[in-house]
Amino acid sequence: MREKMTKISVLGNGSWGSVLGSMLADNGNDVILYGNIESVNEEINAHHTNTHYMKDWSINPNAVATGDLEKAVKGADVLLFVLPTKVVRIVAKNVRKILDETGEKPLLVTATKGIEPGSKKLITDILAEEIYPNDSDKIIAISGPSHAENVAQKDLTAIACASKDEENAKTIQKLFSNNYVRFYTNDDLAGVEVGGAVKNVIAIAAGILVGKKYGDDAKAALMTRGLAEITRLGVNYFGAKPMTFSGLSGIGDLIVTCTSVNSRNWRAGKQVGEGKSLDYVLENMGQVVEGATTVKAVHELAQEKNIDMPISEAVYRVLYEDANVDEEIAKMMGRSPKPEIRL
Image (cartoon, rainbow, N blue to C red; front, side):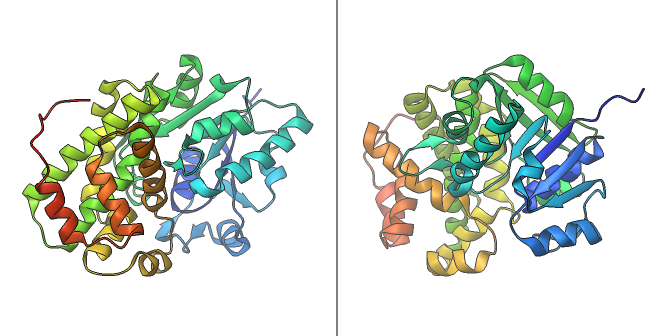
């Protein structure tokens, strides 16, 4: 008798959702992609492409798309959230209603990299709050240096897979890994999420420097000091382990996001550095720039706990308080002397 296929429902069929769904279909899983743009769903099912988000690329034909959330959720063994941070809570509430009706308890995986402004909650906290208040061990986060464009071309990629429950992390590790993407388990759920979310803020800063024609020294300094800020926030606010930020979801994701034209956060920052307004950039990007949302939450967190995050705060002021980029750079370079290593 043929072994039952694992049904994985990918909630969000943008670039990363589509690529992950195709990858999971490559692995032999039963994959359904949920999205609310009907033309995208129709294209995926008819042509196995998603040109709205990914040019010159074909999705595994065994991955099918739907705009019906109930159809996507019912019977799923795994629900993979690949949604913009701002809509995760809304969709999670609707998922909870469906699961309450069916009584099913799928594993919840998030590939969304963000922190919710206002609540200052990580994505796994939102999922626990809205869906699994008593089963948070069934929630897993995946994060690491992984651009959709590279994974789509089956470039070699490594990603962290974190959960409070080691066996659940191992289950996702086995389902998701293949010969071009390798997953590593991690027990520091908060650290993995913070690294993945806040590096987008630093990537905007990296793009701004390039837009202002700064060179490699500036880029290296920014990434290194940016990692210090990410670590400081993760440890002091979320109770993360410092070593996590030396891993895939920390320095790994920071490197790729701060140096690649595939990073929409980097591209957004570059345009800001060249003098374009944030409104113009967001309107013309065509995809979500998570760092522009996350920086609001980071600003709130830094203010609340008096955490020293000069780069992140400068990005916030440039994006939302019309601060002058050159003045912000001068201000940072003129700060009082500090020791390099501190939390």
